[in-house]
Image (cartoon, rainbow, N blue to C red; front, side, top):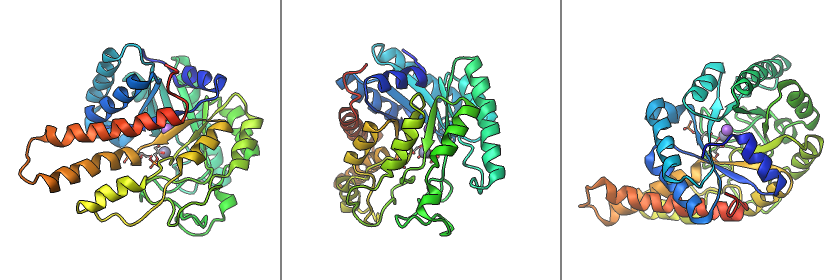
Length: 328
Ligand code: G3H
Ligand code: 13P
Ligand code: NA
Ligand code: ZN
């Protein structure tokens, strides 16, 4: 059944669990998430970026999700637009069956300036008003994560892409979060709490305490009815790096967000946990392994089935560890 982000995260808040939001671009990734969810009775957030929509096409993407919902009638599914950049992206998503949209007003260059804060408030409020008219949920974002354009996150020393901002300047300001939520009416708020997008989050093993838990706690206590969203939540598991690199890959050593840190975040009010990179790595590791172990193989299913299985296992692990399992 199709449900909204609001319905799902209200339930998650009531029962103190988190929900992974997995990015999908195709049938295999969709099946992987649903197989994992069905195996452990977890509700699902499938999210599609603008890139996913143009890769598959809106009709194909929405029909894939329609098919997944029909195949798994007992699993609640929220289809969410990830990083919507304007009203058109968000409204066309809703038209194609998305029950939730992210209006990312922090995508705009120089999102920290007062003019851009007002831009973010205004466009997010417009999207929230329109989405709510038709029963869809809205996620906004406040704060600065790693750059989506370059695929590079800010380094762990807290320097942004330009290297000019201190760690504190990058994190979401709790007072501003209250103003933002009051003025926009968003259902969920993506916060900057120390993570960044992509595989290259940290160059050294995080030794605990990498998330700005005081920021998460402060925002959660001031905004108990707003569901907090953590982007950049891939853990970049060592074993996935090893599979890729053992089979001809050349990914430099890197570290992601340890799952224990995410579990701490969930205890402090994080409800939606965005994961894309880990799924990509699970799939690519199997592509590389099969290409190198079976160089005569040319049936795409021989590549895609093990890839799906690897992504399914990763998703299942996150459902179990975030407390989503058993909540469908
Ligand atoms: O946060 C962005 C997601 O990882 C989606 O990435 O725009 O390459 O599909 P994408
Ligand atoms: P990762 O790159 O850490 O998987 O983050 C994905 C994300 O935040 C999608 O919005
Ligand atoms: Na999102
Ligand atoms: Zn994101």
